[in-house]
Amino acid sequence: MAWDLDQYRRDAERFLEEIDREYYLQGAGHKPDLEIEPIYERYESLFAREAVDRVGEARSSADEEHGARLRYLHQFALDGHLGSITRELETRVAELEATLEVEVAGETIPYRMTPVVQANEEDASRRAEIEAARNTVLGERVNPLHLEQLERAHSACVELGWPSYLDAYSDVRALDLRALAKELELFAEATEERYAETVDPELERTVGRPLAELRRSDLARFFRASHLDELFPSDGMVPALRRTLSRLGIDLDAQSNVTLDTESRETKSPRAFCSTPRVPQEVYLVLPPIGGREDYAALFHEAGHAEHYGCTEADLAFEFRHLGDNSVTESFAFLMEGLTASPEWLQTILEAEGGEAAIEHARAARLVMLRRYSAKLAYEVELHAPDAELSAMPDRYSELLGERIGVPWPRETWLSDVDPSFYAACYLRAWALEVDWRESLRDRFGGAWFTDPDAGAWLRGLWGDGQRLDADRLLAEATGGSLDFGRLAMELTPAV
Image (cartoon, rainbow, N blue to C red; front, side):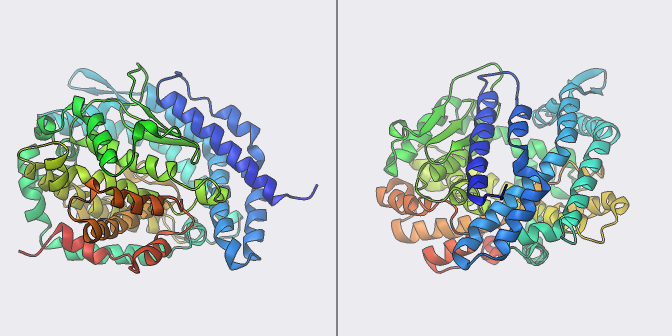
């Protein structure tokens, strides 16, 4: 039987609908178990090597109009193929992590709960003990499975005809990942001089020590920012989102395609998330109304995804609605998340006094995250390169992350800290793109742009295009600009 590209697209869309709905039902607490194996079995032909080859062949002979669609589809096939050959290992990792425990000074802590316990632990020595215990378990029990996953993925990319995993994703993302890593090295250099003085006040406030004395185990407590809890009350979180969207001319409750799931369920995910079984017809924004700065930021981040997907034009091709350059959707998520650290938003929506504390903490936290992700990208480029010596990578990981963030970094997370398919690049590009959206909105509609329905209309115009264009082309068409990490560096470490 002849291979049918259009049928492949239809099956791919049905697969994503079923798998995303399953993730929603389980993550939202509607069902206890995540039953994805039967879904993968029904659609196993989507991820066979032949599918990757056939989509690649179609892409190589496509004209410019269809080239982007097929490149997005090529990445979908590659992602799925690598997932299919590592899924059994991924399942074993998940099952192991769900049952493992760590012992800390006579107390037993579930393995997956250690980051939460660590973030809420006031005693620095105990935070260090928790992290050390977790890393020991990770290194001895989980990393062997992670390493086998990595080796299988690397081998599969070579078998498919690419020199390496790095070259495979540089191709299907149409992105020079090596050049991007070098560009982020310049960002790190530009922020190095004022890095410590930017983050030290917030580190002192949250963990009681400056960068020069910081331990990796303190970072979770730093990001937790418990001193800001009163500024971000749990009962104000959802009303704040509704007020914000309403000021932009968006009635969240009237969006029949976007479901806001706020009900409390025993097995519901403790973090907000967005699920998109059918774009734009069926989008879920799920949250547990807990409160605190991190939860407000997470809710607004996921609301950015939900509005982007919910406002996507229904007649766009499947690839432009469900696939594409995720730097685009992440940029809109960061745009909405950034409101929770905007002085105008804090004053207008939360009517908050003392909002400066939230603004300064968010700036310091974002700087740490960007330097961390810039190091992650540099590391992943080396890890996935054709000539990578895997035995040397734990030390290289510790070196790169430690130098860039300024704290001694553990070797044990050299595999668990790796994002599949170079997703770190999407986050980094999205952070740069968000600056352009925010500056364009301020120039057009003022600092309180989120109170102007015309700003909402401008955003919906961008959202309607889904991910038809990648980040570079979308920005060029919308504003005439280009991604610039230099401006991001100046924003995070402004000259005195």
